[in-house]
Image (cartoon, rainbow, N blue to C red; front, side, top):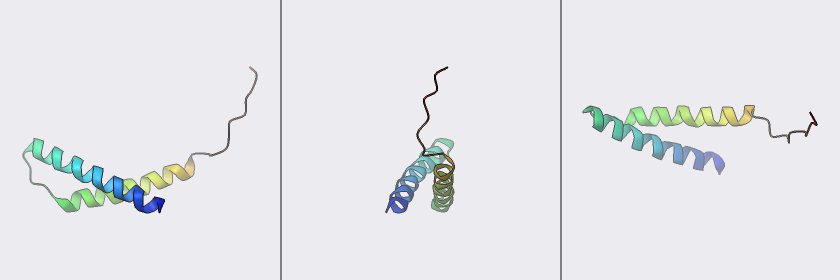
Length: 62
């Protein structure tokens, strides 16, 4: 379920950003561009979350 919600929010936010930026530039809005970027961002989020360690940090007395 977390995969679905991550993709859902990434898709929603990227599409909104794509619309606003294309509108500000005076360009045409392309739905496909936002969808492709959303898939890439979702994959990037999962890769980064797999790389970040989940172990607690030991408290060293320095």
